[in-house]
Image (cartoon, rainbow, N blue to C red):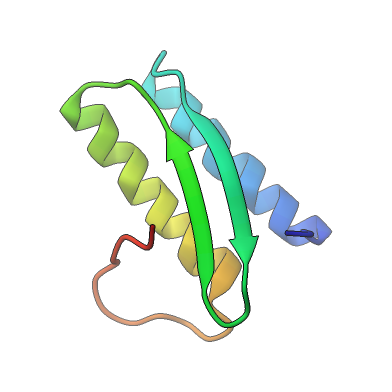
Length: 79
């Protein structure tokens, strides 16, 4: 997917927050905007708590990058 300057800043901020979780070997392997729909593939080798923290940050990234209108309610994982 092609990101604009604002989206790149958001991606960098989320990746920085993932980096703050610790040495978990995080890799964002694929990010595709199918419009409609999207695909994200990532991998990491953290503890269950670290994995959950990454999931929450990926959910945030998905909401910011892929939804054209604000999303209400709890976040959901979109593999």
